[in-house]
Image (cartoon, rainbow, N blue to C red; front, side, top):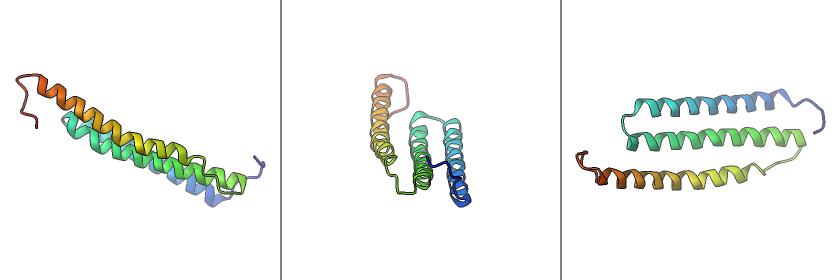
Length: 111
């Protein structure tokens, strides 16, 4: 940390990315509340949360790169792991819900 203030355009970029991330998270929460069953609720929020995480990643890269006067890519590790695990988790949750739904009789026919 150099103690120098960051350029105004970096601060605006970081703030805009973080606000966009908050907006994405709000949209995902709204989707969870509005959609009626588990299978409809799981895909859009997973995508939106991933987009939100990408915004935070870009904000972190911009902030730490400007602060250290060099490109800082250590934050990429977090988003790479997240981008791999979110789809896998979504598939596992959907398969578990499908299995559970088929076991309960009297429900709608599941594929």
